[in-house]
Length: 391
Ligand code: HEM
Image (cartoon, rainbow, N blue to C red; front, side, top):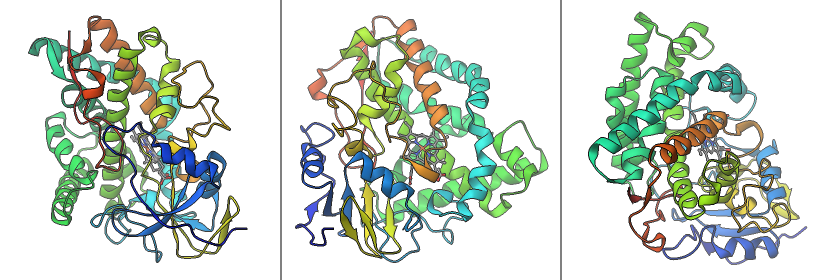
């Protein structure tokens, strides 16, 4: 077992002009897998980079997702994972057994069968966005005009949020996932979202509809107070993550057109980009050994899913985009009890978005060279700021 710390490296290592995942991830995997790093918040953490070790971290009961434990890491100086006192119902920040009550209640809403039933509604959302693109001319920013709208409309539908309020959601959730947002901006955005959701839940209590919020209210396992936190988590977790994947996927398919129309591209895109690289934060609550390295109780841990998904011992030639490989065991959605609840929904959203986009706009092309695309280096999620296209 190794107990000596290497000199902390600064993180995130994403830099303009550099490929993602950064080259350093490969070096870390070679050099033992775990490396001591400092987050932009100044907080020291263990970065975990090997596929096997990332899965070990995400399934070890001595490692917690709960930010109320001492030493829980924060990405930026401000913000971070909210505790139950701050946002009751934010269940991604709970450990078993408390976490299980939320998970068990929500799983029926996200099964493959349930999502299959949502297909016509998702197709309608996608088609309406494409109608709007076509009506507006022959150029667009595919992030603002398509990729960000699709997931927020879909999740709004599922929750029973009126479509008219989607601009409000997009603006507020974006503040919450940007590392450079100030404390005040984050607080005001999250309070505005919670106030809105509270009002919506009160309306649904009086007049239930055919939507997730109404069903959860009827079920009663999740309290009225927790409902707004649960709804906010679903809105935020599924918004920019999905949008970034849609955007990056469009670029990849435009530059590798032989894969347009092949549904296998979806799983490989999820592995290849692993946009939620900086999402799963943990803290050791007891001394624990991962990959031969001692992690002491109270030390923060960041399992890097992009590093794990580019581990050459698991994915041959990981730097190649190859939809023919079997990418199913990637960890882009995390692993263990917190593995992404929305993953079945994401797969269908991506598949429908690409299918209709390329079928209905066959002359779609990038309006700038790939090298000039503006990639995100400031947020917790990897993606594109803008995606200028024309047809
Ligand atoms: C490409 C899109 C997405 C990616 C890459 C992604 C990634 C992830 C990851 C890595 C986790 C694990 C976090 C952890 O272990 O701490 C997670 C959890 C979660 N995701 Fe996603 N996600 C995506 C889309 C969605 C969507 C569309 C929804 C909902 C509609 C959603 C809802 C959730 C929820 C509720 C959790 C917490 C689950 C739990 O704690 O039991 N995600 N996601």
